[in-house]
Image 1 (cartoon, helix red, strand yellow):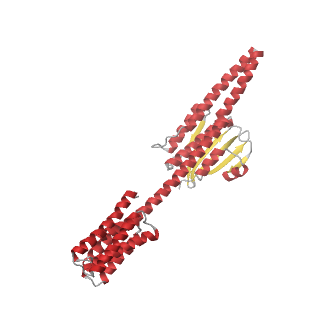
Image 2 (cartoon, rainbow, N blue to C red):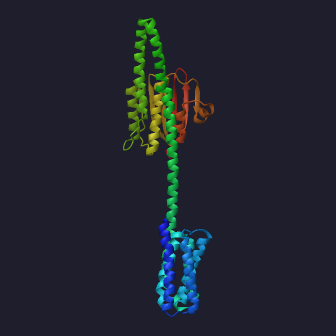
Image 3 (cartoon, helix red, strand yellow):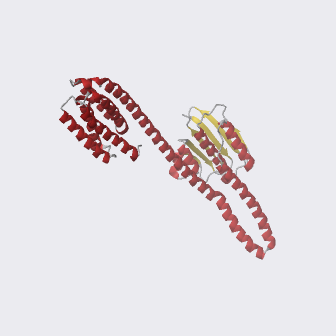
Amino acid sequence: MFTATWLRYIAWVRVAFAAIALALSFAFSLTGSPVVVRTLFGVFLVYTVLVAGRFNVRKGPLGLLALTGDVVFFLVLATLGSDRLQWVASVFFLYLLTEALIFYSALELLVIAGICAIFGAILPNESIHALEPTVLVAGTLACGFAVTQQRQRRTLEAVSNRVAVAEKSAQKAREEERVRIAADFHDGPLQSFISLQMRLEILRKLMERDSHAGMEELKELQQLAATQVRDLRTFLHSMRPVDVEGGNFVAVTRRVAETFQKESGIPVTFIGTNSPVGLPQETALEVLQMVRESLTNVQKHAAATRVALSLEKSDKGLEISVDDNGHGFPFAGSYTLEELDLLRLGPASLKQRARALSAELLLESRPGRGASLKYRIPLA
């Protein structure tokens, strides 16, 4: 992107060419009629000064008119000027190509170079014939450079578009993650603290009437507070990013299961595949977050005494299963992701993650006997 200052410089360079050509036309003999040639040079000088006053006009009809005027000036300078003005014509042609490269497309530059080459070949004039090699070589190089520049510009635009799409996707993912965290915090730790606050108020009133009963209630509140601290630690742990860089996905998933067992006290049976999974970094992070969230939900809602976590790689993708022996969901049966959405059942955040990964989800609920969550993550 050229600044206004550079645009002004470029415009006044054209004025300098016109002034030099007009001045030298009085110093050397001319091939054409001196009066006609000097008049044309004078008109071009006035024209360049006017254009320089509006140096930012480079697009549309006015821009093409300015470019046409430059082409005509070059042809006049090359055919009607003196032999001693050929160097001015050569340098101005290079200026003309530079101007076209900066402000116009590759097609317009090709047209300019083609017109100059054709006129140089067909006009019966030795001066312009002498400039023909310069026109051909410089025009060919400029056209090649313009085509390369245009391709690079298109590639850069495509990359910029992909970056913009990626930024929008990342922003959307961050917003969805904030909503999910807020919902989890509201349904989990916040509700527990509200319950604790209410029971503290009851305890205060109870202590005024029966101190012995109040002490018993206080002991229960201490146990509740300890449980809430453990739940809050579990919640904060689930928010931490999982490090899978440089580690095997199955091994990292095993560590997640072991950490869950240690913090929750719920035994976890882990069965992992022996085949390399080959998940991309971002997908692996998201899948591990799904596993952690599934385990956390078991701890928070299922009242399970054991959990089974399995990973299996098949031709259809990576299959993950989380089974528990807890309460199960309030409904019974097996439901796909589409059916859960239609019936508005199942954990919302896990459904969102599955959709984001284009994964299949199957939820099986056995009220009183546990539940099972199965995911199939596409690997292709």
